[in-house]
Image 1: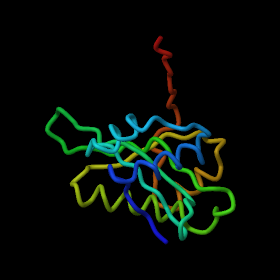
Image 2 (image 1 turned 180 degrees about the vertical axis):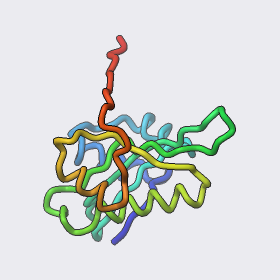
Image 3 (image 1 turned 90 degrees about the vertical axis):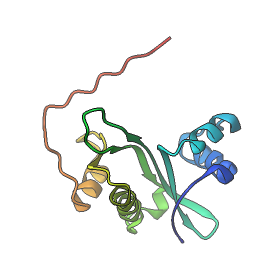
Image 4 (image 1 turned 120 degrees about the vertical axis):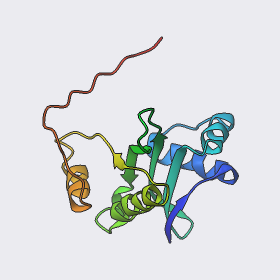
Length: 141
């Protein structure tokens, strides 16, 4: 039981995570490419042989002389494992990774209406610094 960062030897488990959380079977080459890049992070929380939660994100390098930041793109816990501290453990593991690597901060984006996520992030000392963010998506074809 615990949080583990997946590496190139964990391709099958990463594909399983895609199926569980996104209902998509990812391509082994894409998974290998993602896991091969040291700036990409895929963490899972395992309960025995079962995946109970996951997060993935990216180290964002800066050009201004400051240290890197961690962008957490997704974090999710399977419904039957929620309210057991798994999300907190995942966030804390990511924070430990950030400290060990000298990152200046970690951040993520969520919706105010996602009450469980907001509650998790507030309980782990996350701060919503601004109330006026607008996210723009661009479909690239």
